[in-house]
Amino acid sequence: MDSLGALNVFVQAAEARSFTVAGRQLGVSSSAVGKAVARLEDRLGVRLFHRSTRAITLTPEGRLFLERCRRIFCEMEAAELELSQSRAHPGGVLRVSLPLVGMLMMPSLSAFMRAWPDIELDLDFTDRLVDVIEEGFDAAIRTGDPDDSRLMTRSLGTFRYRLVGAPGYFERYGVPRSPADLAGHRCLRHRYPSTGKLEEWCLADEDGAPVETMARASVSSAIEPLLYMAEQGLGLACLPDFAVRDRLATGALVSVLDDAVRHTGTFRILWPSSRHLSPKLRVFVDFMADNLLSGHSP
Image (cartoon, rainbow, N blue to C red; front, side, top):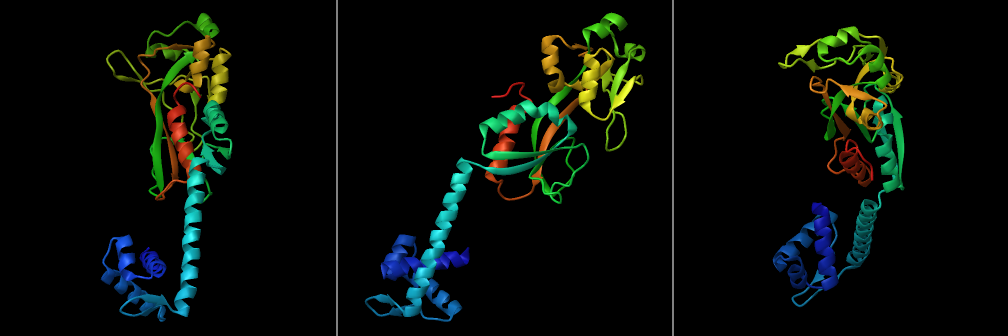
């Protein structure tokens, strides 16, 4: 940037044919302009100006250098214009890693595609811990706390869990009135594919004391099968509210023990650390933060 500053001083002086006028345009003294030009000449090893008490004129080397400098500044202006246009109309491929539950994000993702048709989404659904940088992802959406210092992060919103079952299930097996009643129910559990551990149902009694729920009927490493099994009346599932919102609204599922369920989670988007977000990634981050868990899509 110091070099570009020196080139700008030279161009201003060459076009004005005066250190004094150039200094006035740049907001510095004529002496400062003369010294900057002298340092540039020393670095280049050539004389750029013929100087006299009345005027300065370009040497042949100075005229050649001026043309080159003008091309440099024209290229910079073109680059700035390109970036400003890209910011106004982002486009290109955006590669994003999402958890398997990401299929339930498709309404928001589809809305993004309609809002920004020039951005092509390349979506990779997996629950494994991807290396965003090494695997060439622009971003990843995950739950939990980030632990990679090479990544920037932004919260996309917090969700809570709902304990749900089909109306037909409750007709056959009854409605649990307390967390302790779940011992006699068929509980559909989620297994973390990365660790093999079952996801805990964070339940509390009336006094706020944690209650363990050991019963289970079926286990899945993805949420969609649990959602399907719950709809079919095969058991109770503890699922994110955004995953069951529509089914609760239609009555396909019913939630129970709402006051006892204390389980919550946070979606975060992660991307490689950099000073500036690319325009396509910036609009994606902003859009998902505004719409992912809002319950509606524009």
